[in-house]
Image 1 (tube, one colour):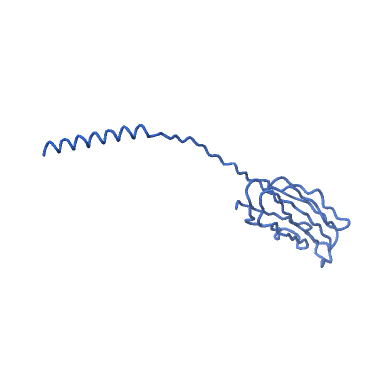
Image 2 (image 1 turned 30 degrees about the vertical axis):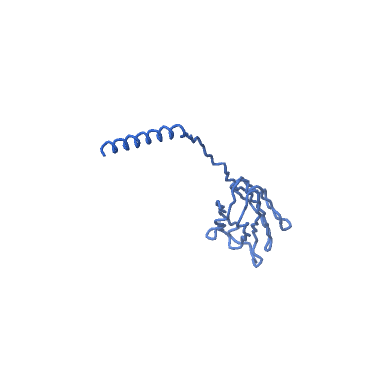
Length: 164
């Protein structure tokens, strides 16, 4: 009986050895060598700004803009006069954008109460390659009967697009 156990143990060890040799002959090492890169580009910018409606005799000046800033200096003469500026925003990047906030605020504390600003809102979704336009209009109050002591009013603002 002991002899049978030793023979079975010997066959078992020989079998495991053959299986190990067979495994190593049939095994293959696979190598992974990879690299990842972000190729998306964020590029939402102002591409144009112009006066599109100017009351007769008024001066819209030369609107100024860069990729991320804009400004104008409007000169109005009499009550009811207005100037409207059109601003173009373009998504030149590779990712879609959405309008997060728009905050255009006149300086009510230091500015003339006779000057009023209104603006439209650009598109809230701006796909890659798309453009949107919005306007800002400044108006000399039609109900004004005399020239106010404070004759100017500034506005500041931000328009923020974020990745969707």
